[in-house]
Amino acid sequence: MRLMKIAMLAASLLPLSSYAALGGAPAAAASAPLMLRAAAPQSASAPASGTAGSQPASAPAGTAPYSVRESVDANGVTIREYVLPSNVVFAVAWAGPVRPNMRALLGSYFANYVAAGESGVHGSGPLVEGNGDFRIESAGRLGRFFGMAWVPRLVPAGVRPGDLE
Image (tube, rainbow, N blue to C red; front, top):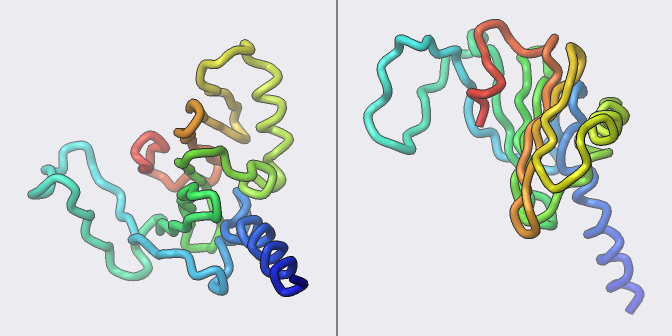
């Protein structure tokens, strides 16, 4: 019985450490997030690649403006971290049946998230707020929540937050 309690405690604490806070270092290697790809900036005039669903080619090491790391928490929420070469998370995105732990996900920007929620019109619509220091777009309904938060001053040149998946 005691072993079961320890296992339940560990399972409840693991999601808190499975992803990085916005503006901080990416998730620790111990949580083994999946490295998706290194992304090179794409110009608007670049031709579309062959088939739908294909991954863009990785840029040579050292030239990519960011990489994407993905992990899934215990509640089935997919978390994507957009990481600069300097090992700083400049954006996070989430999608899943529930909202992730926003305090852990946003870190020091959590207060900005709370302020954005309080300043807007209250209701069931999406949350789209921000300023020069923090931006958030969050929406969803029971069983399907999604959103993205980013720090505009950290976004690499030539990268538009709307292009991040």
